[in-house]
Length: 196
Image 1 (tube, one colour):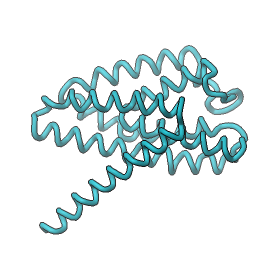
Image 2 (cartoon, one colour):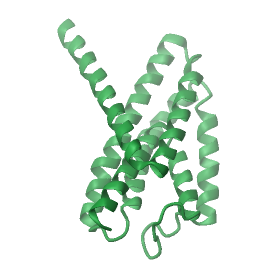
Image 3 (tube, one colour):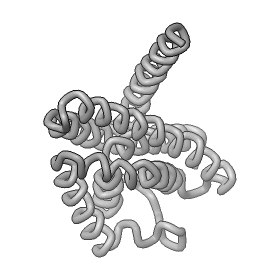
Image 4 (cartoon, one colour):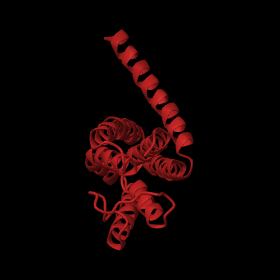
């Protein structure tokens, strides 16, 4: 991989990681289909990811995606799913970033970027969704949570597609999203400190 390929792969990984912060299983599912269809030129033979595009992986990821999507439409179950999804999103974001960096990338660089960029981005996005769903549950008793879930589903689908097809644009969108999340967090933190 030359430097340009590494940058594109990292952009793809960051986009997929952010998408996994919204939904854990959809990005790996669509990525496995893209790898299987040779949409993405990655040779996974003799790597830790060699079974990622196998029939069983595609079927299991597809089933997990459907179950996850359905579960988030059930009030209170969605909050319980967040408990599982938070660490799972970090693992998925890290794994997908490492996968797309697979090749001639030095493993130390590959996994450092995967953990920091992929895991970090997915953790921030997942944390924001947990807070959003918690606020929705608190103020509406969970009645508005399906609306929140629909928004998260749409965001995950579009970010995943952008990451696979137009990786640099996905990275820019993620940068904007990260800026908005951090700005909101800082504003809320300032309000709490001012009132305390």
